[in-house]
Length: 265
Image (tube, rainbow, N blue to C red; front, side):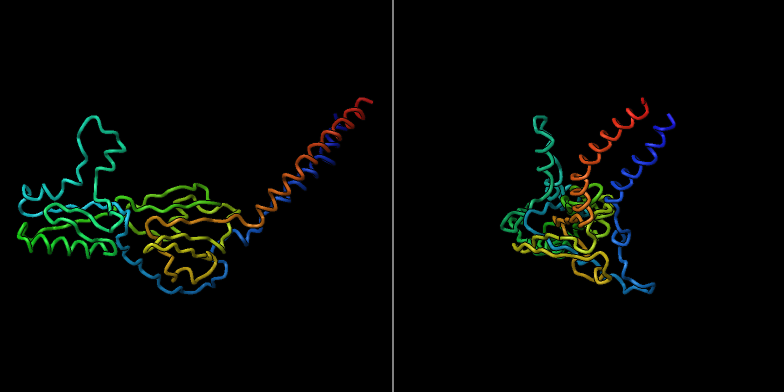
């Protein structure tokens, strides 16, 4: 029994330590903003109000001193009540989906071109038209995004689609909602994919740089995709592990057989 213990501590443990050593990660590569000195940082840029785009789903509600009159303007925000509709159909029946032409059909006002407008601009437009046509007096228009979401993929703890209820989120907040980067996440080369005005934008961001805080891409927009690449440590670790594990296991099996024979003898 004593010989077996000496064998384990003298041969097996060193082999295990060698295997684990190949998976070590430099802690300097696992922190954020490691090049920022202890000083007062510039004020963060305020997130620009997102503009309405094709495919956005909006909740537009109208209220006034005549609630019975405003009912017709809020019909699109009320799900259909038919019992034979599925839940997915109900969700699609609520709100105003911006068409590929950038339009919505609003009750009593007809087709409105809304793509490219901010929420405030659309509020003013609807309010003006309701008053201009003398449909309502001093109406209050409230607009919310129903499908404001971003996607975070790659080396994060909880990759997936994240719904943003307050319609504003920073890159760091989105990463936090995804459970933070793993120790293998590449912090100096995070990929941002964005579709805007019919164009696809690809931007690489450095989480170690102070300039990130003043970047126009610091605040995310709806439908943005963030991808965190694995660093070289993971690629090397996985490669080495796959190469070394069979060798180590075979070696340990061989040494165990020899040790058993030595102990028996």
